[in-house]
Length: 181
Image (cartoon, rainbow, N blue to C red; front, side, top):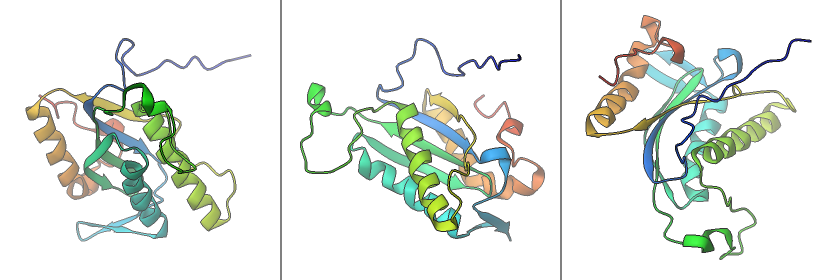
């Protein structure tokens, strides 16, 4: 029997909960365009895309230790910059301090992405009456932003992404590998 041998694409020794800036790309299942369309160099979100936008922005409300920087929702993926800040709560971050029913104790980048993907999928499947239908690919792409030059190039890439859609750059695997040079 053939078993998939999946390897993590994350840095083995890196703590993805530590304060840092992260550039992420999350793709739809089978790269199917689900979030809208690009017309006249503008992304027009459909109802599903509007939910994605809403859930992305809720991410920072659920986790007080993060901020969101530039992002763009494309027909079949999302690019964004997530900033994980110091929580300022030490070990008390795991003890409930409010009456909120939901507060994630995990502040890793993976937990943030997992929460976003889960909540957006749930809302969309309820809206479309498509229980258990996958919305997202299994994983996500990330890059730790190491300096101001990289941040500048990533922000520029995010801003220009809609314009590049028609040039065949609509699949994250086709991204310019020299983006960070």
